[in-house]
Length: 100
Image 1 (cartoon, rainbow, N blue to C red):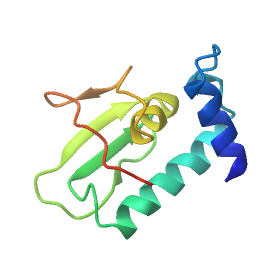
Image 2: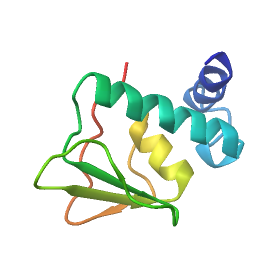
Image 3: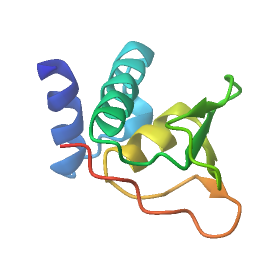
């Protein structure tokens, strides 16, 4: 958890770090944590994430799915509330649910 926070705050400090610099294991861990929190809080039930060629990840069982697509770093950035750069969606990219 601390490792993920260090990476995220390095981006927040605007020192040149980007989510694309994160090791894959940090991105995967961060996304798993965020999705787990959304599910626990019953948020984002209508979201389906398409993360860089992986199988689609449905957050809940919402009937009107909003699909968000992008590379792991772009989806992690968006999910962590740091902007929707490099993502696509059907229509406008929705704001990510809060995770903390």
